[in-house]
Amino acid sequence: MRRSKHAQLAPFFKDILPQWQDDIPELSSLLQAEKFVKGEHLVNDWGDLYLIAEGLFGKYEKTCPVRYALAGESLMIPNQKHNYRFVALSDCLTFRTSFRQLEEINAHNPKVFYLYAHLKDQQLRYLDYRHKLLSLHNQDKYDFVFDHYPDLLAHITQKELAQFMGISMELLRRMMRDREY
Image 1 (cartoon, rainbow, N blue to C red):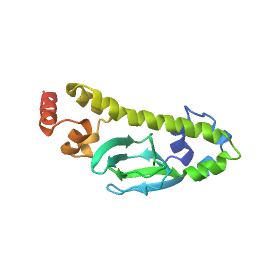
Image 2: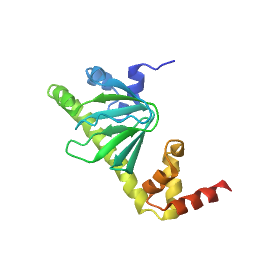
Image 3: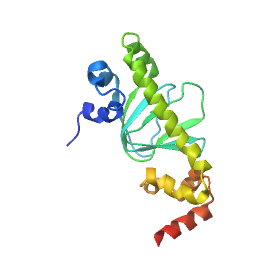
Image 4: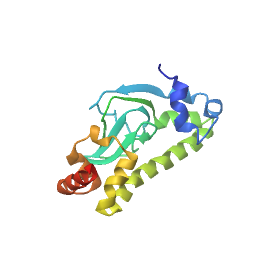
């Protein structure tokens, strides 16, 4: 059974603005559902906001993975020139809006700014994740990644995982072999 749009959006806003549907009633109609199949790229328009309801996305700078985004997380496309590409690593369902549309609502409902500011803070925490990962001792990186992304290897290659973790393929294979016992 398919959940309603409200039920799919509620997890994104419940901790930020529990009465979001009453406080910003136009928000639900502003967020348009978009489905992506594995391998498909996001449109990548500056300032777009994607709320990931189902699936997994990868964010790449050229060919280097810099972030993975799971269901329940948001992706904000930078509002300036960038070298990122965003790829669906599984079949995905998102809800999309633009920064411009949020600005239009904010002109008569300042609670949108509050909501957007919190989503932007969450985005910064997601970005800090990889910085933290790269600063860890190599032996701690494997658990750090798989605590957050338990099924990641079902969607990416070992080579990509090693690149994301900032370690060699040899070290990754050794870590994986050690965990088999």
